[in-house]
Image 1 (cartoon, helix red, strand yellow):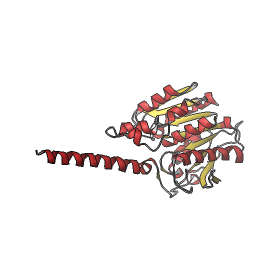
Image 2 (image 1 turned 45 degrees about the horizontal axis):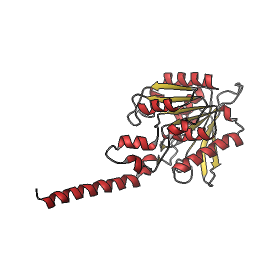
Image 3 (image 1 turned 60 degrees about the horizontal axis):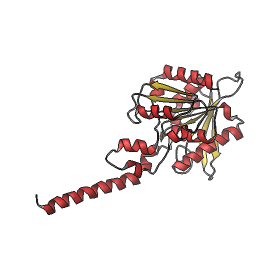
Image 4 (image 1 turned 90 degrees about the vertical axis):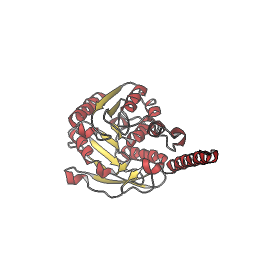
Length: 276
């Protein structure tokens, strides 16, 4: 092969490599945030009473959520799950989760981040943190819930947001499911031939967050997770402070709570019994 031809091939390959790096850098947000606007169903269609809630973020966006009360007012305290859903869809995809919490006798406040469902704006990393802060403030200010009676629970990307919120404002307990140590670390594993750590526009450093959290924490991960490998869960457990609990479940990414339903519910019940 002539040297000039070889050099042209190498130059073209390098150019394509750099173009793909630029493409990955520019489209990251599309892969991190996959919202839908349509509310496909509501809790009342599944036998759950609920209140539709609108509340405002610190930068003036109107956010939307649902407050699902606990099934009985006989309990001494109203304990509330502040739930952070994953990166796809919206709150209407979480009915099964709401039913599970209701079964455990817990109230739930679930909300959509900016750009999801009926919430205004477009999602950003800082925006999701601001929205978490607004949801927390709504529970404490508008509903009179005490911090120690709030269970902050997040799934997948929602766990990254939930852990950041719990690091800022300690709740009664924190539960994080199916999440990563950090966005750059996960990206580096997914795109091994690219400088993914350097390319990542998102931090979402869950490991740093849990290292600064001192409330009881439950880390849940499935050994079948093919999106966020199991070792992310175990590494988060290693980084977390006591008191901490690890629950291994089965099922695909962010679906283990359903696949391992009885085990998941019992584990969550036992954790909350000791934590609250």
